[in-house]
Length: 252
Image (cartoon, rainbow, N blue to C red; front, side, top):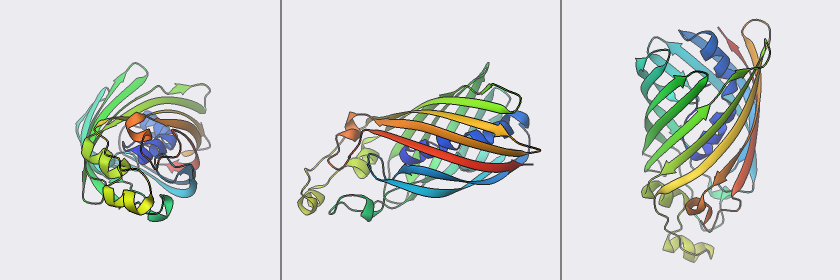
């Protein structure tokens, strides 16, 4: 499954990445991967509370068109074995009012217009991208970079370590982590107006096991660390956030 690039969704889709990796390696042409999984993830970036969520798994490729949980729905403008360049519409998650302290407004989900490029060098895959949030409550621009190195340790087993980081402009940082004067008065927290900067870094390890035919099962575990401009938000409760995922999918 390809990987999208936004805070909470970055961590989640890095976790589910293993189920699509076998498909991408085994058949770089047209394919469909469908499945289901369950993930344990923070309620919002910096939350000490967790949610256990059912996750539908989807990875479709038809010519230049693709649809996946990771990169959204879009097209590859350049598509070679070593270089991919594309654009898509993706999902950007906000947070519910019940998940943040009383007095902090909810942040509605949004869509994002994303551009990305991916380069394969030897066994490593490096990807950089940028997403402009359109609509919803988050707004702003988020950029991301990640490096993965899939390793086939046995005939049916692939291990995929991944390192990733993301940067956000001041509009996104203020919408997501900021506390306005009115929210400060309602919540009792200090007002906070962060500027742009690097937001987080994540380390993820995924194990993918290929069963009979096109059936795959994968499990992932990882941790995300918020950098100071995000972690200094008055309602952030935890700088380090682990997450986990397990799922099963069929590729054809």
